[in-house]
Amino acid sequence: MEAQQRFSLAKHEGPYEHWPVKTALLCDGVPTGTQIEGYVIEAQYRCAHGHLLITSFDCPFEEANSFTLLDDRFQVLAEAKLGVMYDSFLLNNHWPLDGHTLHLHYGMRCFYRLHVDPLGGLLRRRHRLRLTRDDRAWPDDPRAAASVHALENRLAAVRAGLSPIDALPLSELTDGSGGVPRS
Image (tube, rainbow, N blue to C red; front, side, top):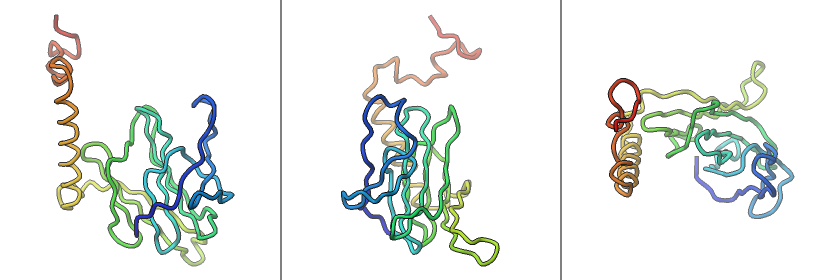
């Protein structure tokens, strides 16, 4: 897989809550006639089977990703999603493992593999995007360890800019019995 920057999404008008789920896809600034789920392209790769796009809905505290595999005519070959209500899957980092697989880093130490399965004979007549949790990534893969370390450093920098009370761990703001603030 090779990273690319050819694709973008059209902008929606009006209030966010009225935006449609799908957005018009542009390639090199030209409309493709295809619509895909999401409002922001988080990553895009060229792979042996076409173009793999990772999109999000840019929704604070409920981030989710949609994965779309397109052929060279911008037809959707396969789709997958990662997200659940009231949880966040904010994509921190991503990198190719091989020509068919991406490693995805969410949260502090949450990793997934996204594998592009090609056409598969009689039983699988379509491409498939297979998303699996990868609990062994940390600390076995040096890129995963580096990604976790980079995220820890970014969070430490953000934390350093907070007021002293905001910089305290949540556990230090409680009385120890489950969340009652100390006075």
